[in-house]
Length: 252
Image (cartoon, rainbow, N blue to C red; front, side, top):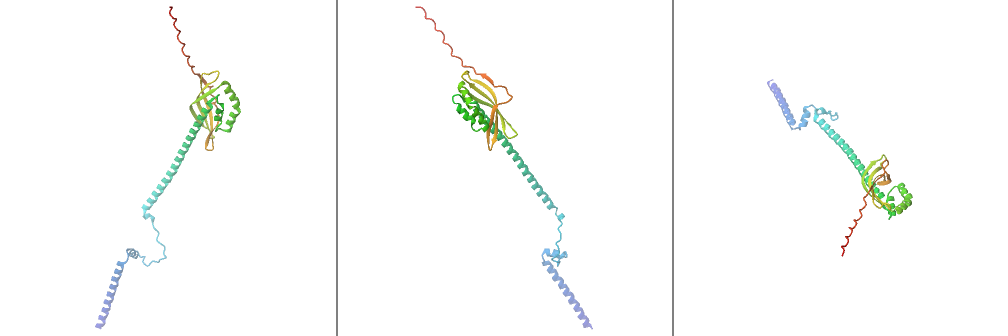
């Protein structure tokens, strides 16, 4: 009987020792697992079904990410707005430069043509007509061609000559893109009956329009609504002084 009891006690001791050994082994295995695996084990996900849906991420736990997104959107938005504004300003500046360039080109062309129209001589009238008919509209060229014979006869008969000096130009833009250029000038003329030069202050209106990429004079004439040219008589040169009378010789 005693032996039986002893035997039973020994069995209990052996069972306890075996359980203790198993606990020790489990502890060692747990220590050797990776940290992430231990965390999953601790959270009760070890052995979870692989087909289970992933847990949703809560963005509210990462407020810094929203700040970054907002900053990126703000920077991109500011960059796009700045680019659009820069493009608009650049276009406006280019347009202003083009307008000024057109204005200067029209004024210069009107000035040059006014000088042509004010410079002629009876000694070579053909040169005058060739000059004023070059590079103008067909309508203006026809005006000179139709009046050439009459004007040549007057120039030759009266022996007329003229020179010009442009004082100022005032280009005025028109709705169709053309320019009406008012030219202030001095015209110095002389002829057979008045050999002494006369200076006239005149206002001419020169019409300039754009044909393709070039500017062209389409018409010229006196400025409407202005007074007739003011003539200024240049002083004639003084005649040389008469020699003093010789003294009579004393009597012998």
